[in-house]
Image (cartoon, rainbow, N blue to C red):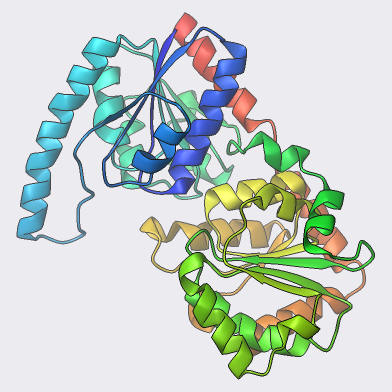
Length: 369
């Protein structure tokens, strides 16, 4: 069984693709995979390190208004379609999977037109334009959220949830507590703005951590992002936060074992990317969500609102984020009896830990027909 997988640009498209590949490898041990991405996207670094065959198509996304650069990108897109047809013709796929990003467009279109069974996996509440177009050509659509289903043809769309790493489910709380020297009888707040960090969130945390240093009853693990780490330490020092005297507050540039950190979290303060939310809800972790305001189609705000409506999270818009606002919401959640427990239950109800298996079975079934 030969399977082409395409997804690029951000980790939110790449890691679900890799998770699906690993799941399919367990179900079909002799399957051969080819990952198709771009040279510019994170996939060009991540996928080869995973030991997967990797091929590139030279594409760039279009700007949202007319520019001469868009004309050049359109010419590249035409060449990309030709390259995609070449890849499909020579790999002879039995199925093709797209997990998002503009690179999926030509490769899944070429596969569909060649009669290859195809599947797109949409992570967000509101689909991007590439998946909206592809929905008219592909065989199946795996929707990561219930709200996304209404944007696609009903006869080919299945609500599956978003695929998550197996380590997210198997990580143990005790290991995380031991790693960071935290107490098992005090709640842990996990703070992360993603792999690159979020400056607005880091700045809002200064006042929160300044207040928290004198209240060790709540523990904080704050990942700043590597590019923000030194500046954040200086901001905290300037604000009078003495981290050496507050072992219940840990500030790190990056969390190399996020599943372990999630395993010990009683509350998360996160952006609202689909993959991160899939992992939080799979573990039933309540959250304060601060959507990235420049995400395509404003999908992070849509994602966050869906979680808030379900009772699994509170949302603070980036433009409204301050230390005072964030601290107020934290105080509210920790002071109202049973609040976090109810949010955790709502989060768990949203989770789909079996999503990768469900989607893998869809891929196997559709190529048999």
